[in-house]
Amino acid sequence: MQQKDPFVFSYAEIKAEGGRRAVISPQPAAFADAFETPDALKKLDVELDFSVGGDSILLEGKVKAELSLQCSRCGDPVTRSFEDSFDEVYPDTVEYIDTREVIRETAALLAPIKVLCAENCKGRCLVCGINRNRQTCSCKPDHASPFEALKGLKVRQNDDKKKL
Ligand SMILES: [Zn+2]
Ligand SMILES: [Zn+2]
Image (cartoon, rainbow, N blue to C red; front, top):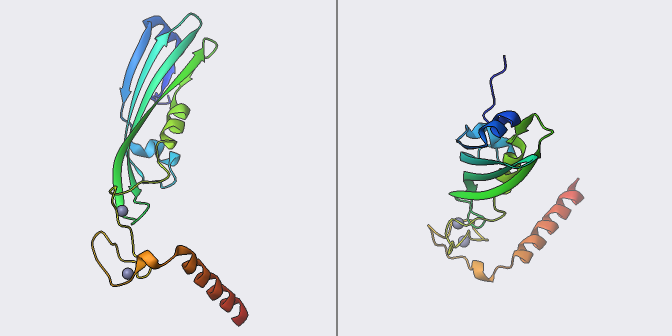
């Protein structure tokens, strides 16, 4: 017999009980595929609150994830917790309430597009690449326009093509 999944519930059981509350902290690996970097998810806590209505069950859920990310400016690792909640209604025509997909979707949206190791992160030197939070250099990165760097890159690519 297949092992019962902690995120799949019997509609009839919850209805008979008049509701249910579940707090689950699964192995991060079970939801790792929700994230671009498979090892980004360090810890996951899920709270599920089922309320029974006339012909449906309302699920109010909360997803909290500890994510290991990279600072958008300097690239250093940043570990931070994020949480969000969701609502989902299940009609009484369903036999099982499978919460895995809504949890996966909610978790996937937790990862921010940008994260900073510190509000005042100095980033990396555009010229020599050192982490300016830890080191100083004599370059003048404040005057180096990122567009200049792009121009240089293009010229180099063209040169390569000519050589071929
Ligand atoms: Zn940083
Ligand atoms: Zn530098």
